[in-house]
View 1 (cartoon, chains in turn blue, red):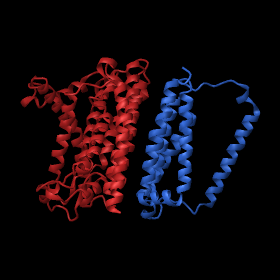
View 2 (tube, chains in turn green, purple; view 1 turned 90 degrees about the vertical axis):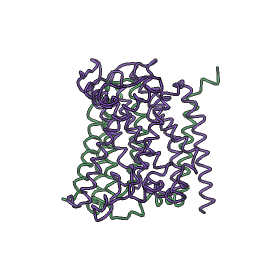
View 3 (tube, each protein chain N blue to C red; view 1 turned 90 degrees about the horizontal axis):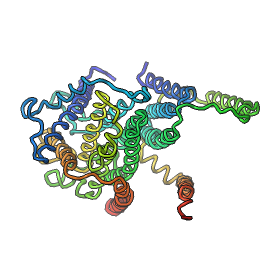
View 4 (cartoon, rainbow over the protein chains, first blue to last red; view 1 turned 45 degrees about the horizontal axis):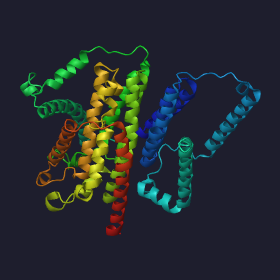
Length: 173
Length: 344
């Protein structure tokens, strides 16, 4: 078996198992850590697809920055166990029906996507040029410049909103 | 890939050598730290174990290994054991992409030259960033799982500090990437070769402010004095590793020193021209220059720790956000304009 294929199965197994455990076990701090493990598994898959830049960005942005925030929130709430809330909303049969429908829809979508793919792509054809940092930069800042700027303005709006919400008391004092 | 090719064996040898030297660097740094601290305070430092006390780190390690492994009753056992492992593993992994010498054939032993580096990745600098940001988890989890207020406060301070200073750190590095036009650390070093005595093209001369920002943020990233808030003894006992003992404490210690070595090695490669220097490079032993520059920076770290008093926490945050970050943004803008003007 080629090394790439073995590595693919290793990283895929890491990603799938950790993601399942995120949902299955009940300690939120462990969930956060397992999600980080899942992101690292995904990053490994990106490396196998000849996209090291995407892999590293995946680790920096998701596993590094965003999950630190998640971890802080979980830690500061200090919730060692997920509490099973007994409420009418969760027990209602309508909620379960919608959840079930969503699950079926996702399963169907996954099956459809699998039939459309042209076999297993264990590693992409060696087109290093199109995945290099320079190529990605040119794509983002020339072809998709408008979408990129629009996204950054969206994030800016969210930031301003967060600052306004956090400092709403300071003006009245 | 042929695992018995001479190049592959050389690569494995380099890997083992780097691992071994990183372990040793912590021991050497402990000795240097104690000796220099003692001299600065007009003491003798360790003198009894071995010649001039040189075996003192060994005695320290044996002492640590012999100690009992303690764990607080209310600690989370899995996370408590995991935290030092994450810290130490991240510290080792970050060094994997740091080159420490030009390509060499080991004095004609090999047919093709191999680079003196564990892995030459074209996104090396981002890799260092990614792994360092994983190291934060070791500290945060140590603080959380200990279930002690001092540990938690130390961990919170540490992560706040690391996240704040990572911005300036990244901006300083971005300016260097602009100058070298590559993200590979080896490429950046090669961009600095040439000039008078192989020294005039170091990025230090083009980026003096960048170097200052990098070193300051590097000290904050490694939680060293005068920015050692996570373990401010007077306020927090020992910060995030208050509850740790024995080898799990030693692993945090190891991680701290290896992080220092990594930051200094990257500073050497990014600003001080790596293994570029007069004469030695032509003989094929440029790595001696690298070691000399690295040693100087490490000595500088120790020197600073025992000379400067610790900042106040609010001063640290104000300094990071209101002075260092604007300075690094201006530095990046000026560099970008310069590159555009002179290269375009």
